[in-house]
Image (tube, rainbow, N blue to C red; front, side):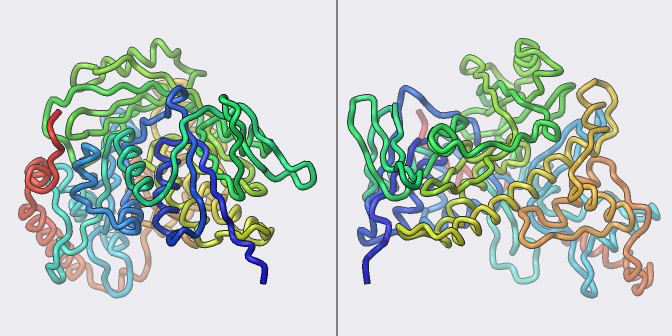
Length: 503
C-alpha cells in the first residue's frame, strides 16, 4: 500500500493558538510521524489579551502531561472558580456564573428544580447559597479537589487566569523540546495548486519558500491562509453581538487576586478584570456605534484598580466565524477561524476544541471530503451554541439606560436561543443539546442571574413533601458552607503551591 500519511505540517502564526497547536501535535504525533514547523514574525506580534479560561483547559494540560504547579508559576497564573457579572441584568445587580455543581440532585431530578419551587414560594435563598464555587469565590477561597467521599470538596471545578504571552512562551519551549521547528519570518505570498486550489507553499520576505501537506492558520483576525489565500468567506454576527472594538491595559495589583474573573457592564459594552500574580489584566469591549474610542478608553482608565502599566491597546474585530474552518488542506484555529469576544472566556477553549477535533479526524494526503465536512459540522455547531449563550447575556436584561442596552434588549435573536428562553420561562426546564459546551447549570446561573424567572416549576418535584424538600435544602446548604470554611484563601494556596518567581 502507498504511504499517504501527512509528512509536513506548517503552522502559520505563533501566539496562544499557534503554540497550543504545535504543543499538542508534538505530543500526539510522536516518533517522527511528520515534520512540524511554525512560522511567526516578531514584527507582527499577537493580540495576547486572552488570559482567562474555563475548566476544559485541564484536559489539554493533562494531555500534554504538564505539571500544574509549574504551569501556574511559569505563567504568573491564578485560579478561577467562575465569572462575576456586574450590572448586566440591571444597574447595581451582580451574580456569579460559577463552574461546577449546584446543590445535590434528588430522586433523579436536578437539584435546581426543587430549589426553584422553594424559591418561588419565598422559602429558599438565592441559588448561590447552594453553590460551593459561588461562596468560595465571594470569600476569596480556593483549593483543588481532594478525595473526601461524598463531600463537595471532592468535586471542585476550576480553571486559570494567566499571562497569555508567558503561556505562549511556555508552550513554545514544550513544543520545541519535542521537535517542532520555529522559523522567524513574515509571509509575503501563498502558492496554490492550479488544479485543485490546495495550498502548496508559502514564501517568506527573505525569498525562502516553505512547503507542507497540511497548513494550520493561526495568523489572527486577518486569516492569511484561510481567507487571504483561499477566500473562504466570513459569517458576520454583529447583529447579535454588536461589540466590535476593545481597548486593553494591564494595571498594578493592589490586593490579593480574586479566584474569579469579573465582567462589569457599562453603557455601551463591558469591562473585564483578570487577576494575575504580578498584575491585573483589564479591557473594555464596546460597540463603536454607540461610543467613541476616546470615551471607551476613558471609561476603562477610570475603572482600574491600580495604576496602568502600559498604554491602552486598541483592537478591532467583527464577531462571527469563517464559513468553513477546514478548507482544502488548511485548518483555521483561534482568531483566524472566528471571534465571539471574551465574555465567557471561550477563545482558548475553541482553539483546544479545534485541535482535539482535528486529531480525531486527522487526514492523510487524500484529504477525504467526509472528514472535512464532519469537522466543519462539529465546529460550526459549537460556535453557534456558544454564540447563543453569549447573546443571552445581552438580550436577557432589564437595562434601559442607554441606546446600546435598548438595542440589545429588543433585538431579534436566533430561534435556537429563543427556544431555550421560552422553555425555561415556562417551567424552569433547560436542556443541553447534543454536546454543546455550556450545560443546564450554566444556562440557569446566567438566565436567573440576569433576572429571567420561570412562571412555574417542574411538576415532579411535588412528589416530595414540601417539608422534606426544605429539610434537604437546609442540610445541603450547611454542608456547602462548612466545606467552604475548610478551604484556604486563594492567596495562601498560591503562596504554598505555585508562587511565581519574583522579577
